[in-house]
Image 1: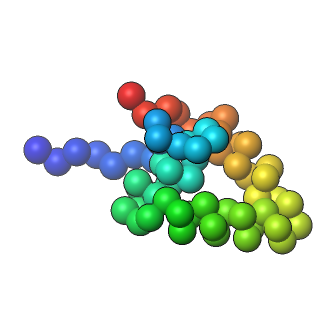
Image 2 (image 1 turned 90 degrees about the horizontal axis):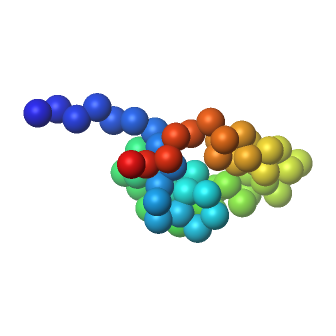
Length: 62
């Protein structure tokens, strides 16, 4: 059957699993997502706030 795709935090994450969950959702390498997040955070620091918010509202993978 068709399994519904959901955005969730990964269990195999380095900090909270946000980047790992995003990478699993889009079927890409987690290193690329982490690198993009670091670049996003370096440009004004808004990436850090976005990561914290995502870690709070994204459910944990079962």
